Length: 424
Ligand code: PLP
Image (cartoon, rainbow, N blue to C red; front, side, top):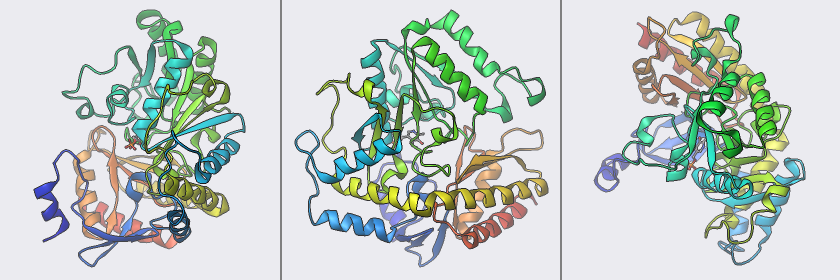
């Protein structure tokens, strides 16, 4: 019996899986199936194994730590990998920050919202439509990438207000580049005058590149304007860097593509290359106002995960980031060439190795059915890709930062055959 057949009997359907693949091993850009086949993995466990599956140096760092300490409990004691990783992250983020470690992305976002509310004393929050911030009740309250994440769980957190995300390919204000007046920034006048006085808003939380919502890169003037609005109104700006962080966009953090750093940011996914770890990174002056006991947790900052994360940083700095930039540009150029050849491709976008291809139907509408057919073909031919977007109409490319040109070419050959079959 396959893993899938066994799993059906004991695992609930609630955890949606994009494939029925049973896996026994992973190395670099490849997963090895129980069916004896090798799969090129352009999903990286949903942007987690950013330095490739079972990177030997990360495995070695975990082994070394395993011989010393498996759990200390950060509410009980201090231990070396925890403090050392915090030191590293503080130095990477300007030297005037502090870090709190948790286990998952959602948990980090919960903590970030609590921190913002605590230090500002304000009740309201602003999130962006199409965002995904996690599945716990607080994180689901700021998530609108798909109604299924909220269905039957309402009422959720009160005093959450939503603004439109600048999805320029399908502008929520119906504009094109030639008649754009940055309505995405203008919308705040309306929000502040009609729905919520800005003095009541603790924070705005935004993904610096939308992940689950469709791999959308917001225009830099929007991000600059958002920063200025937050500054003017005393609103904290939180970046959810859970998917963008730790090398995914070709820089350690996506905020480095901008001219400023957010007040608070959250990281998870790629931070420890597969071990559960997340972090809230915030301005020191904010963290210092969050007193002992106002937040906490049993497992956050596990020694093995912190040791792994420290090694991930080293690998990214030692060439991973450069390779992500180089391979990202290479893949982007290839995908743009596909766009000029295949009419079902409406848009190609992204940054670093966080790239998305939006598929359209004959009228230019989102074409989730076609994406479904393409992904099926790819899996059948040894390539793992994932979709995103509210209609599952975008294919996302989340290669490991260690990916090679040959691996990209191999993957694209399968994708091109899938495109030809699907369009025929
Ligand atoms: N925020 C973003 C941008 C994400 O992509 C995700 C996960 O996909 C989360 C938050 C939630 O992270 P987790 O699943 O670890 O709770």
